[in-house]
Length: 579
Image (cartoon, rainbow, N blue to C red; front, side, top):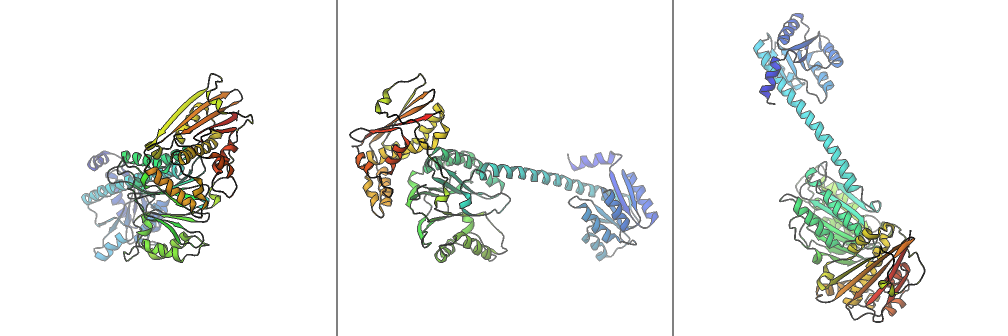
């Protein structure tokens, strides 16, 4: 409704509100009461400032007309107290005065008055003042309602954000973090999730801008991240899915810079991809030196829906006790009152001088506060320091096969009850490099047989079988490489190189699910196109300290049976369960 229409309705309305008239002169009160009644107002009278405060406290009015010079309490003090009582509600106060002194009139406004009328009162001018104050009052009320609605919306949004984005985080009690939004909502996100193999996935992101608009993107990102992470998809696949989602959803000019980290549950390596973020630092746990600096090698997410991240994902060797330091550009680009940047060099210097027994992030936080002082915060600030310790990972017991009856590869061709299910999947050269079939296989098993409580065990089992076929069969890698001091790093580097140039080879995975009344079994057959590998030698290398043979030992512990063909390029594993 327009202001003019609203004023017209008020003009024709018999009751437009209640007015408080405070004046120690009875004649003045009678005259003003008569004029206000003609304008549709009911009138409450007060004989002095104190009486006005008392009557307003008992029954707040829509408008106040206040004489300046009154006994007991003058109009100035009375106006201050009425404004205090009104709080966030706008109650117009119009001073009535015979004074013409400019300083006195200015003081009327300073103490909380909104306008003034000089005596003797002019009816036309009074009516104009009333209309003007009503317009301002109505605008204040509309703004107050909008502000209240906005606050309620923000409270709901914050609750949704916390439940959908933050509540799903894991291992946070062991992760040192810093979060300082530049607004009510942060455009930065920090997400964590476990994979089925118990690896810890971490995503730190920084959306363009800050506030609610930036934070809205965190909802689809967290949904895709956690859904795909718990299914065991690789970092490259997860980043590709998030990128495609954001590219189709975000407006032009808005994107997500991100750092993605996967920490292996064995604490022997981490997988990292830096997409448009500041340097990620891997710190040596013994002396706090920078072990690796991971610079950005990929575009931020949401710019191009066709981005692929396989070539940007890197593997780094670590040991227990090492630390990972992640930060958004809100840290390095924080400014002091002179406009100087905190800078990456300052962060590096803190790392060099930091005692290895304490968290680097504590010192960064302290120096950041001292550096910025009272300078305004331009951007969201988020950082995290992750210690590579066993406490990060939950203690999960893998489910062993329910039956101890030996089985052989003949089960692949056997028949059972009518609910048996067969499934075969073949991956060739390029797909071996780019795809991870394990999440697909797990989803298929879940769809056909359920087995939620066996999900982690089956994921581990299938992963070990597939990795053995890929590494030792197709790529021809030998576990002997791992036995040197830097062997694991060399092994991973050689594996990455061989995958990058792979142009032949295949792996076929066959599943047969045989449910029965008491449970059932899954027969897994994995065959690769390689020359085969010496699985007997691998089985013999099963000491607790050896870096080879652990996968076969784990598979044998989990399965009811495990059989290789003589060549070593085909293996059949039988896993059984009971209801």
